[in-house]
Structures are given as structure tokens and as C-alpha cells.
Amino acid sequence: MWDAINPHTGLRRIDEAFPHEIRKSTKEQEMIIHFHCGSTFQLVGSDNFNSLVGSPPAGLVFSEYALSNPSAWSYLRPILLENGGWAAFNSTPRGKNHFKSICELAETEPGWFYSALTATQTGVFTDEQLQSELRQMQSEHGDDFGRALWLQEYFVSFDAAIMGSIWGDCVAKLEMAGRIGDFPFDPRYYVYTAWDLGYDDATAIWFYQVINGDLVVIDHHESNHKDIPFYAQMLRDKSKNLGYKYDKHWIPHDARPRTLAAGGKSMLQQFQNEKVGQFCIVKRLDTQEGIQAARKTFPYCKFNLQTTEDGLEKLRSYHHQWDDEKKVFSVAPEHDSSSHSADAFRYLSLSWQIPAKTPEKIGLIEGLQKGSIQNINFGALKNQYFAKLRRQRAGLN
Image (cartoon, rainbow, N blue to C red):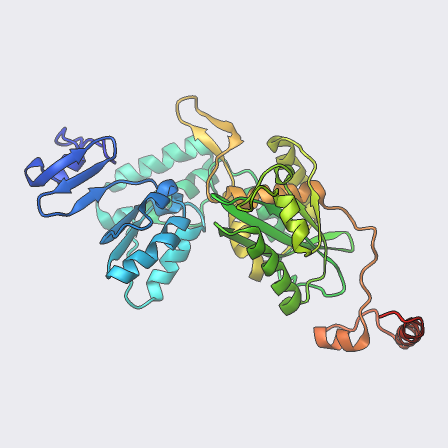
């Protein structure tokens, strides 16, 4: 954006927007302009939003927001709220990610404005040019994917598949098979978790149960800049409020040596000190092996859509980066906002197994409270009662 040239004039667009006559100074390296009136203009990458925390911008423009780090808006919005500032978001869709969410918000939230303009509405391209683009995209990418990309780039479609998507086909197959829908937490079974841990980056967590050979993914969480006590309390809250009974928590191999804001203690040590369950280290495999393990895991999965929708979109968006010069996709996945939940799912796929433990048999009263009395009959109830009496006589709880 700083160096872009207007092809019609041959001039830098930044110079056309801000003539030198109104500038006091220009810092090319920092991409910042100071004006005689006292205002400033600066370009900053959304991956470096921390550099603006504590500053008082009057307005923010998020360009290509679908490709930006959504945490940038989360951390900067209080500044605008406090000083009465404004924000604008422009982008081409890139699937159903955070840009789609903010578009849906802007359509209904008082004080927001939303506009979606297609190529035919803007009048920038002729019909002949648009049809030519469609033919070329279909020639390069096939009829279906080419048309999907064409609709995405020119007609504001959020439904196009992500180019280079790693697991998009796996998620689509689950949808077609009816394995994404209403699959809530079952209180008779233990809950397992799989984590990707970060502090500067996001921490992502998948919650799942193994039921009759199916891996039922019941919950998903992702957040930035939180410490171990925060996540430990979140586990306790879910246990208290939702009834989760944990078996194992699977965390990455680097949780053993790495620290996370706690005086030299490793992440593993900190979790163990919190006493919120058994934390285990996932076996170490390279990224490609983990990707393949995940592909083999997807057919066993069921996702509870209500609580995992955001995570599912991240799994759809996880993709290889296209190298326009070499005309190939990168071997390594692109690191973006989808990476953390995708990495956590890779760890899930490397750790899950049908548990040796039998499902938890819950009591009649507890079953009624939790909305389920399966596995309860008169004989089981009698056995529970006499077992309780024996424990009391033995002085046990």
C-alpha cells in the first residue's frame, strides 16, 4: 500500500492521497506521515498491533480484514471507544471467517454501516471482462472451484473453498454425512482436551468425548494473551457449570521446556500445580505426519455445531500458501489465524484413542439432574446404595 503505483498516472498512490505540500515530515521506513495540522497517518501490519496499544488513534482502517489478525481489533477497540474514534473494515471474502462475522454484525448493530458491492454494481469491469475472468479461472482451477473463486473475488461470495485448503474436503464430507450438527456433551462419558499453547499467539483447545468408537467434539475455545491460571479456571468453570468430568488433557511436546509468564516453571509444571486433571505430552511428529493423522481421524468425528462452529471454520480455512512465482503450493501450511485451532486438532488426532475406562455410570438423582438416566435400573440403583453403606461403615467417603 505504501509503494503502490497508480497505473493511470504513474504516481505513488500515497503521494496522490497526501500531497507533500500538506506534510510536515515523511518517514519511509516507519511508513508514517506527519502533517502540518498535527495529525499523522501510519501503515501498520495487523500482526504488529501491539505497537499501537497505548496510542490514541482517531480512526483505524482495516484493509483486507479477512486476512488480518482479528485480535488487532479486539485490543484496539477500547482506545476508539474511549476517545470517540471510528473504524472501517474493507475486504474480499476468504470463507466464513471473522470478516463474515463482522459483516453480519454491521448489518444489524446500531451505529454501524454495511455495504456489499459486486463487480457489476461498481462498474469497474465490463461484462466481457468478467466473463473472460470466469473462463480463465475455470481453465486454471476447474469448473466448480474456478466459478467459486470468481464469485468470491467479484461477487462478494463467502462460500468459495479456500485455495490450498488442507482439510476443507474432510469437513465437507462430515457435513454431507450428517456428522456436524446436534451432538452435545454426554455426562456419562469423560471429557478429553487437546491444546495448542501460545502467549503472543493464540491458545486453542478442543474438548471431545469418545463414545462407541466415535470422537464427539463437544466444545472449542481460542483466546490470546492469557496465562495458565486463566485456562485452569476455565476448565474448573466448565466442570462446575456444564458437568465436564475430565480424564486427560493433551498438550504439545514443547510444553515441557517452554514457560508461559510464570517465573521459570514450564507450562507442564504450571498445569500440574493447578490440579485440574492429568496433563499428558503429545508424541512428537512433524507437521505433515500430523496433517495425515488428522485426515485419518476426521471420519471418526462428530462435531456439535453450536459450540464448535468457529473452530470448524478455522479447520476449513487451514491451507497451504500459494507461491505465485513457482506456481506451486508451499509444503508447510500458512501461519495465520486458522493455524492455532488446526494445530490443536493435529495434536488431538495424535493422541485420541478408544479409552480403556468404561463409561461413567451415573446415579439416578444425578442422572435426572443432568437430563439422562441411561444405564440406570433398579438393580444398579440397589448396588449403588449398598456400596455406599459399605463405604460409610469402613469410614470412607
